[in-house]
Image (tube, rainbow, N blue to C red; front, side):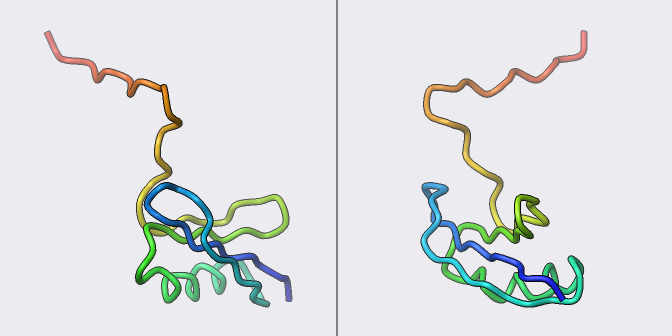
Length: 74
């Protein structure tokens, strides 16, 4: 069993709350994580320094960055 950290993230892409859960595998941690999503923009699951999964919206772009332009077929 490993300890996994679960972070609840708001619309501004900031961590609002965190939880520790003991799971047998990455798959078990990913199966449990979505129950923590309601009311938050996203939930991330980490095992030590390794991000296992992110549920919900993708991370927002840092302030001052410009989204890349998509290629338009000729």
